[in-house]
Image (cartoon, rainbow, N blue to C red; front, side, top):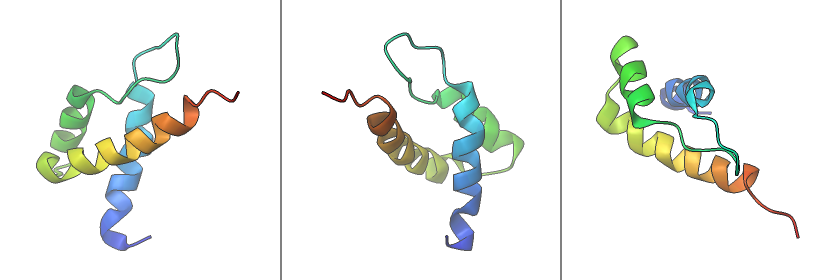
Length: 68
């Protein structure tokens, strides 16, 4: 993994613990959690959030897939 993306990878897995409970499957990482994380670790939220959304979208598609 490119060194400049390690902080995004780490943020994604850390923020996964902030997902609200969902009875129909996993739910997205809340923007507020990402904003707090970015502020705490001095990350640029405008750059971090789109990457997190893309990663989270792929993750949610995988974990919420219904096998027929």
